[in-house]
Amino acid sequence: MNLKNIVDSKDIIIKYFLSGSKKNNFKIGTEHEKFLFNKENKKPIPYRGNKSVTKIFSYLKKLGWKEIKEGKNILGLTKDKKNITLEPGLQLELSGVTVENIHETCAEVNLHLKELKLICDKLNIGILGNGFAPVAKFKDIKKSPKQRYKIMRSYMPNVGTLGLDMMHRTCSTQVNLDFKNEDDYKKKTKIISKIIPISIALFSNSPFKEGRLNNYLSYRSYIWQNTDKNRSGIPKLFFEKSNSFERYADYALDVPMYFVIRNKRYFDCTGESFKKFISGNLKKLPRVFPTLFDWQNHISTIFTELRLKKYIEIRSADSCSYAGICSTPAFWTGILYDEKSLNLAEDFTKNWSYDEVINAYYSVPKKGFRTLLKGKEIIFYAKKILEISFEGLKRRKILSNKGNDETIYLKDIFNLINLKKNSAEILIDKYKNKWKYNLLKIFDEEAY
Image 1 (tube, rainbow, N blue to C red):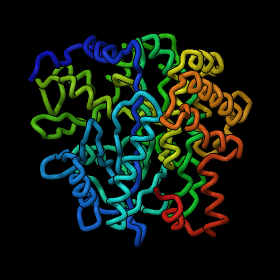
Image 2: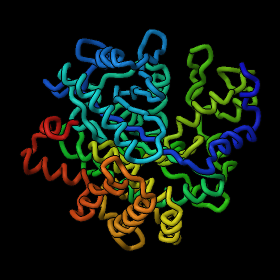
Image 3: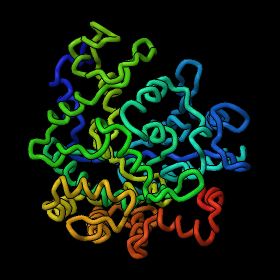
Image 4: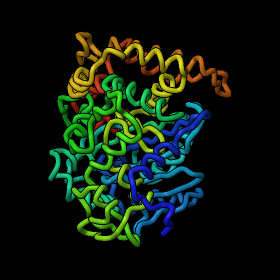
């Protein structure tokens, strides 16, 4: 064990966050999840078999992807710093490399989906981007054999009502962005926190459950709100003047642990405190002390709408169409990576209190654009914030090889604003009218 990596004080954690600071050359990381289904019967595919995850992996290996294994089980693949991994319910996630602009993000997504689709078509497997499995019942979902998920499955019912659904039947699109220093982190996390309800309204795409309407537009967001109050939601600290790397460290230290890995074995430490770990007082592992690897594992189990690592992760968007995978990072990049846009967004939201934002946050999964914030429907604020993002991307002046700037990736969101309907509402219209209440049509018309 490298003693330099031992976490024996909060100062080590604060330095860890500080080490993520970038003076310039901010990067963009995008992670997106999708469901895999058997085209013949529309059911989720299994982990093993002739039409399975491992079969897809075997084809990807022929294209240069290398196995990520846990014991005998293949749990993912890696290539050129990109990772393909499995979520608990065998949702497939691409964690892309960090790139400099949205054109590169979109190119990465396009290549990944093209590669994946060619393989899946051979196997008669479909790929669907949606925030919640629209038809499958919980008993139909096949499970990843990853050890950490076994621990989580046992713990989830003790701390929330929908944690198992979160694990096995949801998919999201996540954006990872940089900060230049602690002050920049404070400014960005406050702005992001206030805009989270707007983001949910814009990127809602999960109105179905088990073949019928679920009375939500983002059922995925509702599920997260009822997963584990100790590790989900929007932390109030992001709204406070005292927000800092130290405050976030204090917050994260208080989030109950899930597990510790030693010698490739997972030890169930659910409910225990990382503070006790630092003191060597874990019940399952007395006199064992944490490393930075343990800390990285721990903060990856914090499921708030935004969270801090060596960068800021924004986790408020449902999995969606190909265009949505590009528009989600474009939306946030235009706001956060242009100084004028950042200041405009700060000024525009300066009078929004935590209570007002959190009330909108709990309402928006069901009401979408009609959610009220400070007496106005959230679509009013969405339009203003979208315009700020558009101008920020325009000022970046980063062109594709076709001569387009990054604003082209906001086109679909502007269309939603003009229609006054988000993707979930458009799906509902199709379900009621075009599909005549036959939700199996979603696999034919909305799959990648």
